[in-house]
Image 1 (cartoon, rainbow, N blue to C red):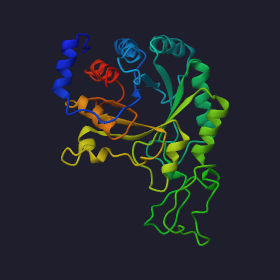
Image 2 (tube, rainbow, N blue to C red; image 1 turned 45 degrees about the vertical axis):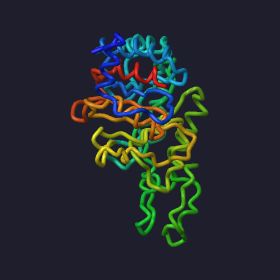
Image 3 (cartoon, rainbow, N blue to C red; image 1 turned 30 degrees about the vertical axis):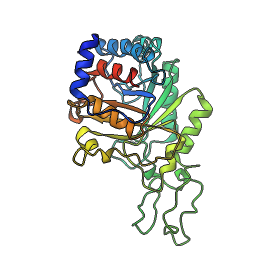
Image 4 (cartoon, rainbow, N blue to C red; image 1 turned 60 degrees about the vertical axis):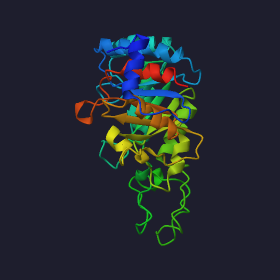
Length: 317
C-alpha cells in the first residue's frame, strides 16, 4: 500500500505516532533481500528513493539499500547480474545507494569465521558483478569470536586463533587472566581490522556497514570505529520499547563515537513513527522498521507502510 496523498500520509502517521523526536538523523538503511522476480517491490524501492532525495529536510539524504542473492552473497550467473542491474540502477538514479551482503561466519550460529580470502572473494564478486556498488554489509559482525570471555570469566580465549586476534594482547596477564578491570581492546590486527583494512585499500570508494545486531562485549566497543556504520540494534518492537514502554532496551552502548549507528526494528505493525522517533532520540543516525517477522523471511519483503515511512523520514524536522 503506497501513500501518495498528503492527507492519507498525515492520517497514517497520526495513528502511529507516539511523540516528537529529540535529535537529528541521517536516513534509512534497508535490508532488501528481495528475489529479482519481485518486480513490484523493486519498483517501490526505486520510486521511494526520490522522496528521500527531495525531502524538505536536507539532512535526510541517505537511502541505502542492502541487497542479497539466494546464495547468501553475490549472484553467481551473468544473467542474474544483468537482471540485478535493472533493479539496482533505478534506485541509484534517484540518489539511493546499493550495498552488497556478505557473511563473515561459516554459519549464523557458528563461532568460526569464514577465511578472509573467501569473504574478500565475495566482495570482489560484488564489485565485478555490479560496478556501481556503493558499499558492503558485513553480516555477523562479531568481534567476540576474535577475543571471547566476559569480565566475570577467568581468562580470555581466542576462538579463531591468535592470528585473527588483535595485535595488542596487553589485556592478558602472563598467566592468561584478564588484566585489571577488563580494559578496552584495540581492534588493530584482528579479523575485522584485517578485513576492513583490505576493503579500504582495495576498494576505497566502498562504505562499510557492520551488523553486530546488538551490543558488543563491554571491552570491545572500539569495534564501532572501524566501520562506517554499525547496526547495533536488531530486534522486535516489543523488545525495543521494553520495559513498560520506556524504550530503555533501545539504548546505545557506544554513546561517544563519532561513527554512525543503525537501529533495525522489526515485528512492528502498530508504531511506525514511534520506532523512528525513539531511534532518533536515542542517538541512532540511521534506522528502518518493518512489520515483517523472523519466521517469515524477515528482510525478504517490504512493510505495507513503507512509502509512509520513507516520506515521514524525508520530511522530518
